[in-house]
Image (tube, rainbow, N blue to C red; front, side, top):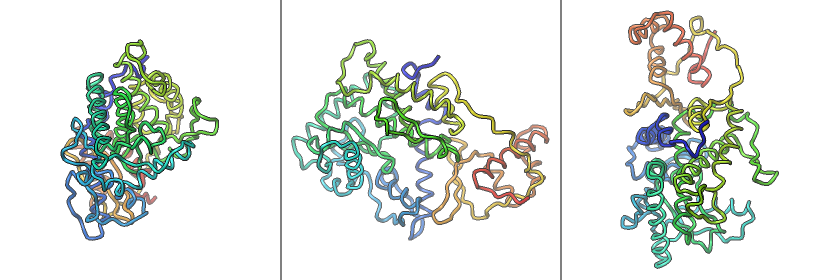
Length: 421
C-alpha cells in the first residue's frame, strides 16, 4: 500500500496538472475576473501584478461581492519586495510600507493567535528599516531554502513555485508562530524568524503545500457542489471542540503528506536528522494517514482530481456512495444557453474557463469538449451537434449521443445550462 512518505508527490501533482499549466490557468482566472469586474473597463494585468497576493485578495473580494474592483489600485509584488533582497528566487517582503499594505493579512494572523490564546502584540513584518535584524532573518531564510533544496529538490521546487511572496515576522511580535498562510491572500507565506535552517525548510514545505493546493483548488475539481454538506472532521490530536471543514481537512492531509515525504528525504524517521520539539516531521506520515482514511471514506463529497490525489497518496480511490444513473434527458430536453457566456482557453491544457457575466460574475472550469458543446448549442439543435461531434470524434453516432448527454447533464448540474423539459 502506498504511504505519503514514499510517494513521488511532484509526479502525482503532474498527473493532475504541471506547475506551468497551473500558473497559466490561475492567471487566466484572475485576468478574466478582472476584465469582468473592473469598473473602468478591461486592462491587461502584468505578471508582477496578477501574481501579487494583494491583487488576488482584491479580486477575490470582488468576486464574492464584498467590494468593487479598480485595477489602478492593485498592488504589485515589487511594491512589497525590494529587487536586491530575493532569497534563491523567492521574493521577500523588504519595503517598510509593506506593514501598512499587508495590515489585513497581519490582522488575520493576530486573530488566529488570539483564538489560540497565544501571548502577542499585533504581528509585524521585518523590513529593511530593521537593519541587522532583517539581514539576519534574510540569511536564515537563505540557509533554510538551500537546505530544503538539498534534502528534497524536486518536491521543494514543485511547491515553492506557487509562493509569490515571503514575509518574515518580527519574533517579538509573532506569538511563537512558526509559519502561516491565508486563503484570503493566496501566494503569501509568513515565517517566524530566529529559527534553525531545518525549521525554516519545514515551514516552507508546509506553507508551499498549502499554496500548491490552493492553485489546484481554484483551477481543478477538488470539491463538488455537495462538499459543504459533508460533516466536519475532528483531528484526534486537537482539543475536543476543534473541527475542520472538508476543504480544511483536504488541505491538512496534503500538507502532512508533503511534510512526510520531506521528512523521509531528510532522514527524520531513521534518526539521521534531529528536529525541534515543535516539528511536525516526526508525526506527519501518521497524521496524513489518519486524515486520509477519513477523506477516503467521504469521497462522495470530493471531486475527481481530489480522488486522483488521494489514490496516489494512499493506493486506493475514495469510497463513493451510489447515486443512481444520470438521467438521459438531453435528447428530449430543450437546453437554454446563456448568449453572454465568455470563454477563455489555456494553451497548456484542454481546460476552458467559462464566465457568466453576472454581478458578481460566476466562473466555471470545464473541458474543451464541454466548451465546444456549449458554443455549438447556441446556434444549432442538438441533433445537428451530434453529427458535428460524430465527425470530430470518429466514433459511432449512438456513442456520441451518450457522451454528449452525460456532458450536458454535468453542465446542467453545475448551473451552466438550464433544462426546459
